[in-house]
Image 1: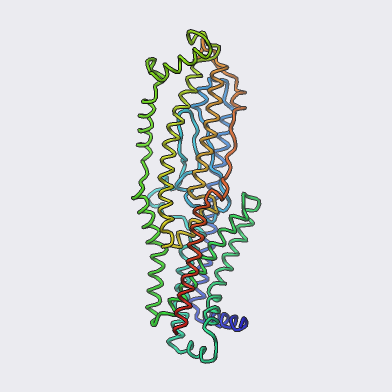
Image 2 (image 1 turned 90 degrees about the vertical axis):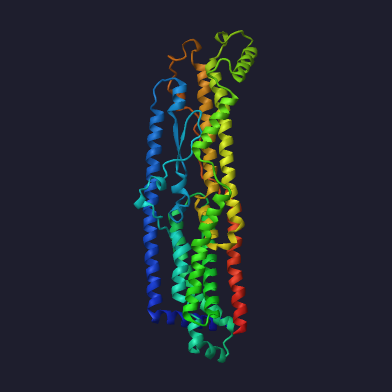
Length: 468
């Protein structure tokens, strides 16, 4: 039976080759994929070089600071880049929208900036064609145009009845035609995987991330091959098969993903950044104002400090009271801004959970979830980066405030300069790409949807084939 399956597959390849149009469409698909790969690689290289240049310049500026006041250093700030995985060449995800550099400074929790999507002109707002987009959108569309008549035409011409009359089992016909459609596309996916592995060799979790991406892509294309065969087998007219498959493509790849995203944003709207900052400022004023000598919170803080050091005035303190005041102010502002960030992240997580709840409607979006998670460019990876950047910011500002407290003369605070060696030794821990496990929920949900995407068309195909 295995030999018979391969004969059916070879006959299907021969038919497609002699038809010319399917072979031409497959060639166009390969050319389109090559263009997308080159464009995405160039975009990634430009992106990475920009990040490296800004990072190097920021490092030089930080290290070249002269002797100065610690508080001025805390407002001089520091840049931290988002780690980029080489798989971003395949799927950049939300990278262009979320940004890739965060500015760290005292009393602030900044979001990532330098995002090309918001800096593009109106003529440049077309989405970048990437290899992931080719697999997600164009590969199924080309598959539909190539194979919508693969069984319908044989039913009309009587070839299918002839094959069954010769004793060829239905499952052999189905399996052979499925292999004829799936294997060329799977070979293209494997070629993409091999090239990407060579590009990303030695990077973080390269094998695991690439395996997840290739598995999801193979399941997605396998499901489309089954769906095309099912519709083609069920249809009685060629135009009926084509229109049905095109409608499925439009719904799965365009309408449902966009509709779910809009529904999630409407159901769980995020607060504009300016409004969030306003609420944070209002809350900070309610907690305490360090510039107001009559403020209850800082009056109590001052009393606690004097009691701790057993002195009657701040002039008698063995440390700089302004440095202690900065530490307390930073603690309050950090708590408030982290609370605002947590509320924002929670709302985004609710949006994602809402989309995952209806993910079974669109395997195209499920594939995108796996591809973004594998490349480290989904929401979970971005939030992990923001948390690391905030931890680095707080460590740095805390260190500078301690230098202010211990090294700055309290009687000549504004004119005191501290050695630049302190800035060079300041804690600036490296930011690492989060492990792929941070996206576990999205990956598991998406793979289950893709599994159903294979099983449901397969079950329908089996049922329809038995009736023929």
